[in-house]
Amino acid sequence: MQCLICGDSAAYYFSKVYREEPFCTFMNDIGEVKYFRCVSCGFTMSKTHYELDHQEWENLNYQYHSFSERAKKTGNRKGNPPPYYEQAFMIKVLSKAGIIDCGNMVDYAGGYGTLSSILSKYFDISVPVYDPYMQNSSKNIYVDASDLRLYNSVICCAFFEHITSRSDLDQINRLVSGDGSMIVHTVIAENVPSDDDWFYLRIPVHCSFHTNISMGILMNQWGYKSSIYCPAGKCWVLLKESGRDFASIVNKINLEFQTEYMIWKDGFVDYWKGF
Ligand SMILES: [Zn+2]
Image 1: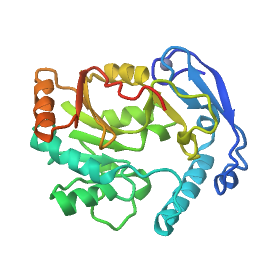
Image 2: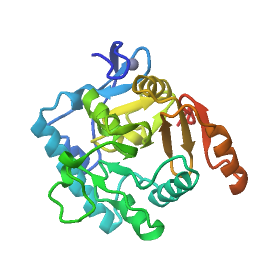
Image 3: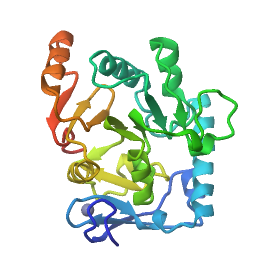
Image 4: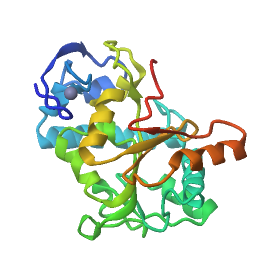
């Protein structure tokens, strides 16, 4: 198998059989999941998920997302939701600091629009949502695929772990303007553990696992120069602009908040070393 990120070869790493209900029922026809890891950058992918045909992949996503929506209402969800409030606050701070233009953003694969709703209601920031599975929604927050354009900032929350091809990633980056940014929320580890009990494998539609090295390579391929990590929002902001002193801007915010609210680094902020 070839690595989607750096192109080097990926070798068999470990496998998992889903045993927890209802996921084992969803995965019954698919069976054992085999993970392959890139020998160079450590990017880890589920060969099993990548080889599902379109209909099988759609069925699995439909089953999982229907379960997940029901679970939210009954308080029976598995896995943690993204820290939406913290992400909304972070977007407000980034905007006030002039790092992003919140008037020119899109929430890519934004699902039911939770982040967009919080931004609108509590922060007066209007961010349209693009989601390929929500094209028929009656909510007026959605933008159709044909209306997508270039944005100063593209939010991509809990999507990087769902991709099954390189083009899934590249189509997000194509929406970011020449001096824009991409805000990414996913789990990025130093090394993906070969542990079938790892918390991030609990969700049966997670099939791509990024590392600090693979993200550094991806950023570079896409033309991003530096990045910011916000631990509260669990988000990275990948920045294309190179002529600005982001270090000073971030430092000022941190002094004002009297905490290390954000971390800036040339290249990728390798914040998480282990889990
Ligand atoms: Zn690789």
